[in-house]
Length: 253
Image (tube, rainbow, N blue to C red):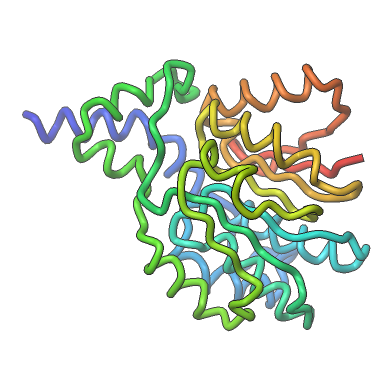
C-alpha cells in the first residue's frame, strides 16, 4: 500500500515530464545534424532534459560563436552535468576553448521549495519535501560534486575555464564568482525564490544578443511566476520562444 501511494505521488509530479522526454524529437529527424546526434548520444545519460532542449542549447552555442557574442556561459542547476557537457562539446567542435563556464548548484540536491512551487497539475513541491521520502529523493536530483566533475571532465574542455560554485544560489550569487558578461544564461533550479534571485543578479549581466534559457517555465508555477514577475517589474521586452512543453528561450535586446 505504501509503495503504491509513493508511486502515485511520483507519477503526479513527473508523468508529464517523462511523457514529453520519451516522445521528444526523433534523433534521426532530418533537421538534426550528425554533430548534434553525436552530442545527444553523449549527454543523454547525464540529463533529464528533452532532446529538443539539448539541440536548442547546441544551436545557442553556435549562434553566440557565429555572431561573436561576448561573455561567459552560466548554468544554475547542473544535476549530472549533461546540459553543460553539450555546451562544451559544441564549443570544442567550433574550436573555441576560451569561454569561461560558471556552474552554480548545491551539488546536494534541490533546495527547499515554498508554497508557490506547484506543478502545472497543482501538486505542491513542499509536500514532497516535507516527507523527505523516496518521492523527494527522485525530485531532488542529487548528484555529488565529484561525480559531476568527472562527467564534465570527460568532455576534455580546459578545466581552468570551468568554475564550480557550490551552495544555494541565494547564498553564492553575487558573493562568489559572478562573471561581468554572460553570453548564455541557463536557469534550471525549478523554484520561485531561486529563479527570481538568479534573474535579479544575472540577467543584467547577460549581454545584448545573449541567450537566456528557462528550463522549468512550463512545468513549475513558481518558476513561471518568478520570470513573469521579473519581466513585468523591470519593463523588459523579451520574447520567450517555446522549445517544448516546459522550456523557454529568448535573446536579449
